[in-house]
Length: 275
Image 1 (cartoon, helix red, strand yellow):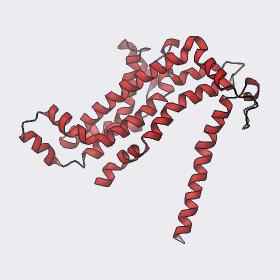
Image 2: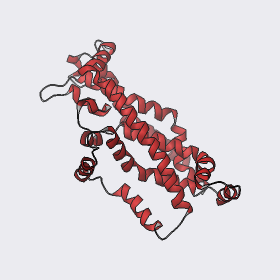
Image 3: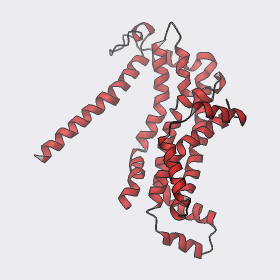
């Protein structure tokens, strides 16, 4: 009876995955290779004529290669933001886990608040304007770091809790300074959770739409998600080019997830398994 229930649950899970993930992705691919007339119908049908290369060229060349500029901006934004999240998140988590003080409860509350309280757009814009960073890539990088740091700290702290304190004590006895203790002893041990944070946060930052829209206005500052406006207007929409753009934007995060799927699961469950 239990085996039959597990089988049906497995079949149901596969069916739900097909409906939620595979079918929409297949719809994107089919629409991206259609001609404008057939794509405008937005139906799930086989293309009468494949225009993969033509649609790809038009998307890349649109508005003076805005997609290429957007990919460069998104890569810079993702690499800088995620690198800072990894280093700062690991350092903060290490200090919170190893050094318990009377301020630890308050800091934990602030970290959790970063996950619960929604971002305030207008005050953030005001702060960036006063700092001279509004509408600049460094300003958006700081915003992404601030919004994603809490999640990174929680992941790192759960894993650091499983590392024996004896490892720290042995390094201190050998004469290691605090920075050397962290970067040469503790940080290499965090490899699995580092991969998890990199992949999860990279996908989140690369696919972010609202933050670049609010905090990085301007055509030359466009990120990949904002290029979707290129093929839409008040009266007409080039659905074949729009879906080709969506396909090009979707491929990098999808490839990253497929390659690091096991590492993501291992990093998310490492603290629970070892604890």
